[in-house]
Amino acid sequence: MDMASVEITGYTLDYLVRYADEVLPLGVSLFPINLERLEKVQQWKKENLRAYTSLAKSCRLSPKLDSYCQMIFQLPMTVALLSGNCTFIKYIWPNNEVKVLHLWGGHAIYEPNLFWLDRYPFLTPQTSEHLATPDIRQYRLSSNIKHQIRPRLSNRPALSISHNNHFGHFIADDLPLLTLLNGPLSAFIKDHQLVMPLKYSGSILESARSLIQFIDSRSFAVLDDSCMSEDNPCSLVLQAFDTMTHLAANCPLVQGFMCHQLMSRICKQLVASQGSQANTTKYLLLRGGKYSSRIANLKELLELASRHSYTVIYPHQHGTRELLKMLSCASHIITEGGSTSLNAYLFASPASRVTVLLPKRLFEHTDDAMIYGGMPYIIPFLYRSDYVLGETVVKNSIQTSDIVEYNLGAIF
Image (cartoon, rainbow, N blue to C red; front, side):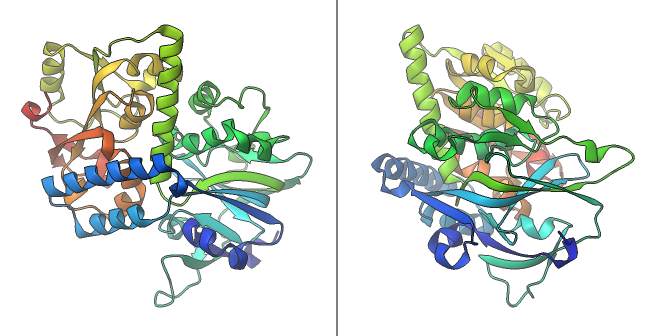
């Protein structure tokens, strides 16, 4: 492959679903799943929309955020099962976070939105600003970044199960869609091996094996990182597959609904195996490890939490099965925002109350990065959340990482 000669068109997944005959490359097939036909989806969506309307009345939402939310509530919730000739474009950002793009038929990328494609340093925009549309963009693959092109893999079809190495993104983006393959759709991946182009995949693998039935019986092919050795410091790797299968959603409400379905099913299974138990335990979930808490008045919060009999949990210290066992029996969970709150959404019983602590400016002065990189993990879970919005003490370039002071009286 001559990198400099590769021209790429980015399409939104919604555009792909609507105009598949025009934009689907030869050798690539699309199986769209329209969830809007299900009555339970309609009910869940209405419940989430009511929660959004209530939130909009309680604070001054930025016009940009309101416009984004109105747009995703209008989209028909659709899952796209893509299969065929595909090249993994694996990029390692300077912060060591791995991201994967799927290049279909050698020239097409399909994403829920195109905001982030413009940020990849190896994709050079070719569409002038006045011709750019929200649904279609043209790019050229740049050869200026040190890269490695690997031999095509053609011996066995592969299923892509994660698009990066971030646990929060996996459980919010990929895991909910993969649960669809527990049922009749498993026929699409009968002979597939599971591919994870990740450097740190332990927690992701554990979650996948704990919550997805078809995982244990499959072999994994984890693309190694020999390209990252000191004598070959590539940050960009291209790996072609004759047959790759991948699930994607046209809007984040799809993952929110699938999370709801997954947890409802798991809770029923727990009741069947352990008997009905009263949800009485209360937890406070805090960021930990390399992501320290962003609560300015944390000491006072911990004192109040102890006084009100809350157990403090740092999710990164616990495995999936352990978190599931603890949080599924919670009556109330107070959680910091970001990936920490995703543990509450995924592992808590639908009957549990979840209070999320977030900076007020995230809603009132939302920047573009948070519209497309933060809100997709908040809006789908409005139906089961209360929010306590605090005042930012120290701003961060990532708004959810602001250091924030909260009114503790509003939390307890």
